[in-house]
Figure 1 (cartoon, rainbow, N blue to C red):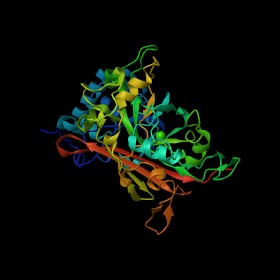
Figure 2 (tube, rainbow, N blue to C red; figure 1 turned 90 degrees about the horizontal axis):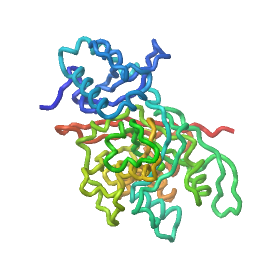
Figure 3 (cartoon, rainbow, N blue to C red; figure 1 turned 60 degrees about the vertical axis):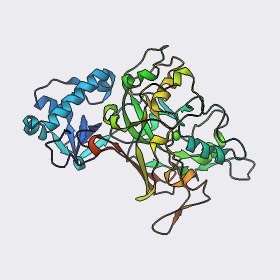
Figure 4 (tube, rainbow, N blue to C red; figure 1 turned 90 degrees about the vertical axis):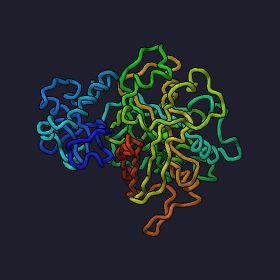
Length: 408
Ligand code: CA
């Protein structure tokens, strides 16, 4: 029998008791007091207050950040999740716990964790093929290393911002088409990248790779990512060391960290690999870590794409194994994103450069206007759901951002 909450409406919500994502919130009456919240239905449970109300001492839930809980490791994650599930399903707890619920409309959500290091991957074969064709026309779209290792780069942790933070159009160097010399100014080709991000909880020791089997021990949860990208800056600067200022001005994340356990029903086999991976990346014989998460991108409210995360060539477990294969250690709050999620068809691409084929085929908007890249005032919303138990859906929440004009 599936678990049911005593909270009206929660069972039919994407934030049912099968989800229970963690975030950080404040309320207007206590604006300086950051608290750990758990999304349930259309409410936020004040998790530390709920623990006190049921007579449990739980320091990791009473902290003002998710850091202590994230660092505590999987046995603690499991027992805390079990406790939260009990409090929200067993009627004996209902009176005490209901008093610690805050309507979500009254909660201000903050950056859910302190980002340590940030790595962004490039794991969609469809995206990498499309970008290869657009950035390097006439050449093999996939580079020779692509099917041997999950390609990534180190991004800028300090400019990861929570959903809703305005995105100021970046300025930088770009070389206009057919020009011999670059110019400096506001980006003309501001784009999105719809991705899924993985939050590391348990640290690892320097010099010790975590391997494929270390994924569930180290990864705390999952959120949505919009890796804003200035294509004109990127195209000029990326050779030969990869993305830099075309990416580092801002990366938006959703405010709810969905625990890995909540995605158990979303696990699926990744697409067949046509190149045999080296042993440290070979996940044949392992329970696969493909995830059947369906994203949706809306531009100014209008749906423009539904990228399927299940189509990703490299899994997050392989990405973690790769990023620690040289002995690089993990810290609590390390964050790695999947790379743009793009499926095989035009309606499943995760960036505007692919959706419009570098501006050649503009997206037609309901108001009659067209978009190639983002205009000032445009708003991008990314949402996602995944299968839960008994036909239910687990929601990953949303990541939203609106473009502000460039600053002089
Ligand atoms: Ca990216």
